Image (tube, rainbow, N blue to C red; front, side, top):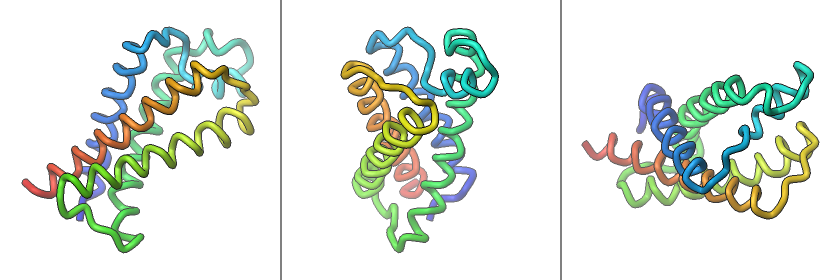
Length: 141
């Protein structure tokens, strides 16, 4: 079983890798979380790029802990790296769908274009795979 601390650490690592991938894919705009900050603080998402990144990092860290704690609650095990990566991939897909439907559309009120959705989906899958690999490696070690 992965510890909460390992989940938090995995969340940090996975969020950093995800952010680097997002930047490499050419998305130089603010993260969707900047839109969330702007919605409640007023102004434009571009005004809140750094607070949006900090909020996104916090989400990623907490999501890592939720994964580490949630997998055993669901009766599953991160017993090997390959299983952990598979579960991480599934988790990344869940985060992607939740982010696209709930956060982007319902909470923020965005209607992202196809390119934004592709980038969003890709980086959330990367997040899940890296998180699963991190926690799987931690358990095997």
